Length: 117
Image 1 (tube, rainbow, N blue to C red):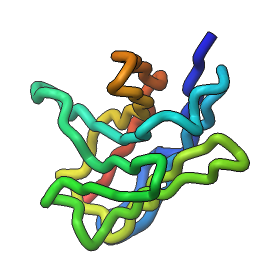
Image 2: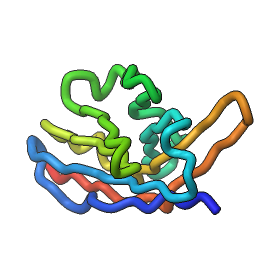
Image 3: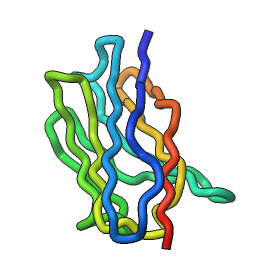
């Protein structure tokens, strides 16, 4: 059974930093594109960043230059380092694991990030 367990997040002032972690179990990490998404109140869930098994990254324009996604294949963990946080980054952040060829898709439990102005 696949599980994605998130940690990190919390409350930070604008300009501060946070790091999110997502640990995967179930033997899928090495085959999955990992991603971070977020959903603000009243808004749809949106892509924040993804990283492929080869290490290729993709970022939403709104976080480029401020957020960094990385993966540790030895620990089956994906990270999101968030710097220069802004109030508009406030949202629930979700970890995702996807394997397109077999239509596999799994989500973490979500973690709240709140940035105060």
